[in-house]
Each structure stands twice: as structure tokens, then as C-alpha cells.
Image (cartoon, rainbow, N blue to C red; front, side, top):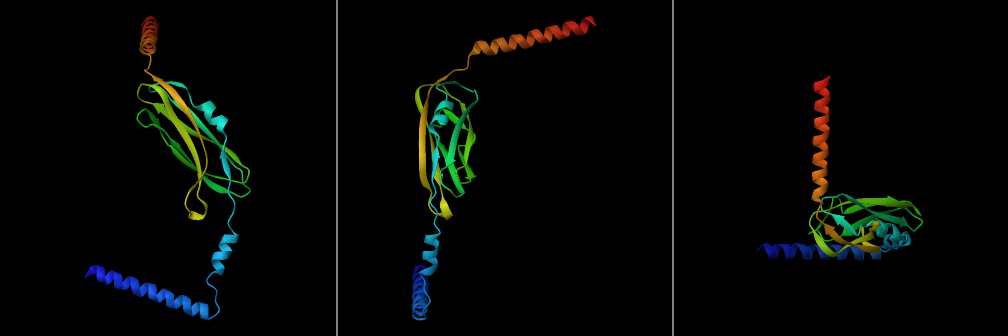
Length: 185
């Protein structure tokens, strides 16, 4: 019963719209004019990633728990302002990015560097590819990929335990020195 009512309602809606279009076309009002106008206003949007900036910033060898910065420099190669979206694709099993997607508005010819904070959190040997993709979504249409670049982290090493021991020993030394000064004075 519900499906029959919905089908009946949909049929009436389509029939009403068809009658409206016929009436408008007979009265000399063009239904295509606004669509043509929108097509004439379509702007050519062009953008690109500066590949060398990205590739220089992706570290080859990393350590678990250390903080790294991956840079993506993008350029609006068109003449009009546009909203661009950069999305990082990576192996989330080993790498963490605080914010793997960023959106930015750039004026015509403008360049900007986006910063992505990366923390490796598990040991790994072998290439882990990180890909940055640049998208644009004009006028609420489907997103269009404009450019992409990739590089790899080749190794994630365990954090060096000797560094931790050195830090603890240094802190204890400073505490002993401060206690010695306080007791003398």
C-alpha cells in the first residue's frame, strides 16, 4: 500500500512538471536560458602541487614517536580564486597524521604551503608510500583531481633507549646538583 502511494505521488509529480514545462514552452519562456548562462560563467580552474617541496619534506628514515612535518606546496595556476583540497593517502597502520585533509582558498596565481604533522607509531622496514592529492570542487560539483605526488618513508626505527637513559641520568644529575646547592646555602 505504501509503495503504491509513493509511486502514485511520484507519477503525479512527474506529470505536473511535464505540464508546467509544456505551458512555459508554449508561452515563449525559455527554460534553457538560465542553464546556458551558468555554462557561460563556468571558470577554468587549474592548480598544481610543487613536487620538489613535498619530496624534500618526507623523511626517508624515522623513529617511532618522533614528530615530523610533511609540506605540500600548492599553486592556483588559474586567474580566479578557488577552493582547493589536499588529501594525504598513507598507511595508517604505521603512520599517524593529525589532519590528513586540508581545504584552502587561493587567489589567481597564489601559492601556499600546507603543513601536515606526522608521527610514526610502529616499527617497519620497507617503503611506506605517502601520496598528496590536490582536488578542486567548483560550484558544488563533483571534486576533480588536479595533481598528485608521492614519496616514501623507507624505515621506521624503534626509539633509541640509550637516549632515554641519558635523559634520565642528566635529570638526576641536575636534581643532585640543585639539592647540593640548597643544602649548602
